[in-house]
Length: 462
Image 1: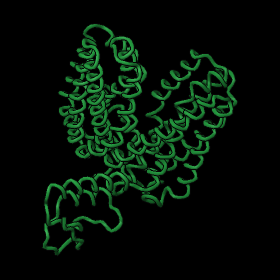
Image 2 (image 1 turned 90 degrees about the vertical axis):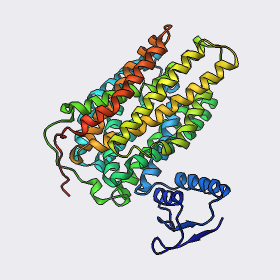
Image 3 (image 1 turned 120 degrees about the horizontal axis):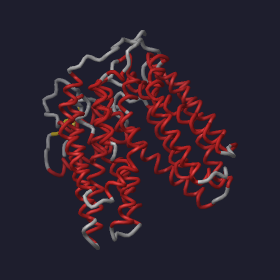
């Protein structure tokens, strides 16, 4: 393969489009559109270039992605992965709460988050994405530091609910910040890259939690809690020092917005509902599928862990690739349609696994897991494309919060409902019909939303 570096213009060599896409995706030093010119188009050269393009496109953040977002996502995911793996053990063994009390607290937190998320989105629009993100992260850091002081259910409820509110405020601020500092045509790609990074951090954090679980001492669990508090304080420090300069100075500023609310935007609410139905992929993966494997198939229990590992690996490797055509609203709707079809295929495969035995059962379960993950990847890309594509600049955080109402409600109602459904003889087939219906409605709903004027499409003040 003969490769020649040359200026972007005035060169007589033909540029292979793959290299141009790699340069545009990475914006790595010394690489610009049209710089890499390839004369030999042999199959071996194409394969090698594809490998290089994949590595460069993953290791180097996409163009327009501030380094701060990547660092924050990785560190936060490490802490979150460690906490999620030990929190149930911490509250039952260290704090002395019962399993029912912990479950009650988590349910109350989820319900409160659902109720306040839109209002906190409006707060983020009013004060600015960076300030809201800072406030939410600082509150979370302080609340994590209080966790070891929890000794009764009332204190647990107070801390866990405040933690949910702080997390919602920080998430709203972060979503607005990304919209402020990342160009419109790159927001989905950047979000996809950050989700891949997040999964790497979650895996690392889970590994750290494994050490605490192996030692199984109160001090080990407390150390994980304080690790989260320290990571959040580091996040606050980074945001305060580099938040404005990492992207755009305007990122910290507030925006004007109308007194109208996104909750009155009926077409957008319809998209949120469709987004919520597709978000059933998460309770299907984490709740329904493990129970199905244990109670309705003869597959080995270890397959439950295998499914989670495969899902995480596919997310790391394929999220960016599956998000490439979801930057605009119609492209996102088509991705949503793909997601519905993939999820319908997954449900059909899981249903077949209940009728098979031996190696065929394992093969069907793994195949269903792969199709389920593709549905998850396309659904995530569609959610980013629609929420950023339809949200007015002055109400971006509020609109994104409204778009997330569907998935939040899914996690409250979905696990119980889907488990009860799929354990019936025709339950998986009902899910197939549901997802195919969602797939059929996605594009018409997106066109309806595009043709409807957005209320409160304000402009930024700075």
